[in-house]
Image 1 (cartoon, rainbow, N blue to C red):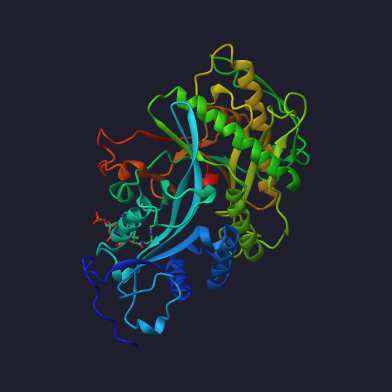
Image 2 (tube, helix red, strand yellow):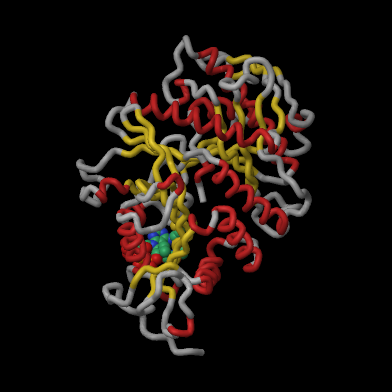
Length: 448
Ligand SMILES: CC(C)(COP(=O)(O)OP(=O)(O)OC[C@H]1O[C@@H](n2cnc3c(N)ncnc32)[C@H](O)[C@@H]1OP(=O)(O)O)[C@@H](O)C(=O)NCCC(=O)NCCS
């Protein structure tokens, strides 16, 4: 066993943030695999991460380490042998994306740095290494030295991460937590009457919440069909247009605020589908191809501008996932109502009620289709992140017991607004001078 040098203090000049070499990146993966490889073997985990990087293109992905290595050449190619005492004190990865920002009725696409897999080896914890790494990374982002972005953007305006250690640590570091809810939908067992519907072409008549001032909607669920691979790029483009439009009007209605949301791009979808493919080929070998989502069909839903659809991604919890559904989850990554009706966020009025009911039925039909798909893949439950009231109504039409849960420990969306730091404003996000940033339509699609 080589003798390790003592752990350096964070203030030592030798302690610095560098881009990991290939070997160091692999070492980082080995270290953090205890947290994030789940039921995959180390080889399978390495393969999955490599597939993601390859799809993102390496320029948009950086593996960072805080290290005590001296005089490191920051091109990631320095020979390991020159730094025998160098160690990984902490590590993380960043992925460069873009997000939409709406402000006073105008929408821009800005650079967004997403941080993942923040990890300090157990023997190095509690010495401020992760804090130092995040602080140096912030400086690089503020100064535009954390890498290149799409669309020629040089400086990111946003950094996001999904905290698995509650909201406090990252808030203290300048990434305050945002809404972290999801609605959990049951998957009816194969023997239940609800499961008897045939395929995903569903038409069902029943009554929804009558009496006592509650909504009184006659449920005649529209039909839905599975998305084809060919149509997805066009739907994604339509979603981007609708999202921009929605952000324009929402930011007009909330003057002064910065409303931010994911650009719902193919990149984000591919991230999930690559991971799904890698996991399913190891843990769930029953099927080679998985459907990507479903779309509502029929009168009132078929023309561009009226369409309603959703995307899916499945996760399997164990090596026995094909026979044991425990912990296997179907995520509805995003539900798109192309019309972006105003009542998505406003109170429903008598005038908007018929349209509300129409779209709630559409969402109910998609949820029913999702339940059937989840049954077919041996999944235990379905999650939909941060559902607006229309989505909640749609869900409850097919699962009256569905509950909204608040995540307090894991996958908590956390966002740092970089322009304030660039403009010399305080790092304290509670300070009055700080911009008001609201993360809207924050669905699972943006997670990583
Ligand atoms: C979280 C982690 C990266 C912190 O690394 P570190 O180098 O020890 O961090 P620092 O020394 O800068 O800060 C230590 C702080 O982290 C907090 N922390 C560590 N684990 C935590 C947890 N599970 N929940 C809440 N806070 C936690 C400590 O309480 C301590 O807080 P304090 O500064 O108020 O005393 C490290 O504990 C780790 O790798 N944990 C396992 C992987 C993980 O959960 N990563 C976070 C993914 S979002």
